[in-house]
Amino acid sequence: MTAAVRAILANYESDNPGVKANLARMLMQGRLGGTGKMVILPVDQGFEHGPARSFAPNPAAYDPHYHFQLAIDAGLSAYAAPLGMIEAGADTFAGQIPTILKVNSSNSWATNINQAVTGTVDDALRLGCAAIGFTIYPGAEDVFDMLEEIRELSSEAKAVGIATVIWSYPRGGKLSKDGELGLDVGAYAAHIAALCGAHIIKVKLPTDHIEQKDAKKSYEGGDWSTQAKRVAHVRQACFNGRRIVVFSGGATKGVDAVYQDARDIRDGGGNGSIIGRNTFQRPRDEAIAMLDKIIRIYLGQE
Image (cartoon, rainbow, N blue to C red; front, top):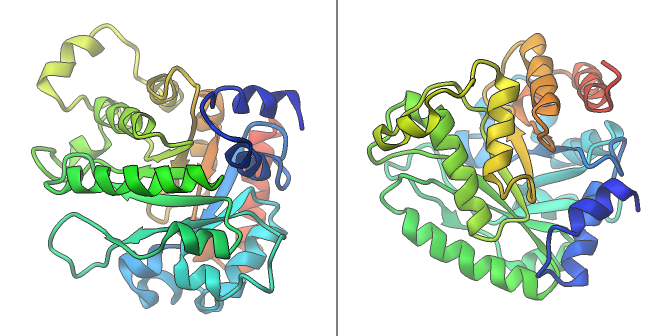
């Protein structure tokens, strides 16, 4: 256990030793172990977008074992996936990489902005997962149902020593498309996840757009010109840095953009990246090389 990890765990004042042990499992895993930084591989895109859209660019990725092995070989902090993906490799890879069971999911045909609960805390215990993961959509018509669902699931998980990761993605309601990535909206979404009791908060990198009319005055005079400064503000919204916040990689993009995102997250004080399609849709050698450079960026070597 390093001083950096002890300092992070000290911020979780209500949690039992089981939850802290599982947070430590992820924070001490892989090449970033002990630094307070994390890189997590999420593979829930098959549910969200379909198998061909997710895996056809790199057919080896149809095999769930591919993703476990990629996370292990790249020296990542954890691997997140829905129930079936975790079950398909749980025995072969037991103890080799901390896993996060994504317990709610949607699909690309649904017309409402919501997700179904597709996994349980009992599943997470049975499979040896370090955490459960859950998506909320602040702004959506059904968001209050989602908040009640994660209240129940998180309470149950904490009682048995499992951590909670909340994906907080603003969408729906009065939000414009630009507003979904607005700085004020992203910071608000991160804060909502913290208020819901998340141990780890996953949000998207924000732009300098300010969406909410009532928030514009609060942001006047601030310098939001760089992504690093915007990351720092989102971190501030997570109880002034008392909660772990990681940023998603988003849609597939060029490698230079991926690396710049990592530098901005690092420079803004974020805890790391949760990056899926930008890695597993590339050939394995390219993905390993990309993840190697991202890790070196977080280590301050790039």
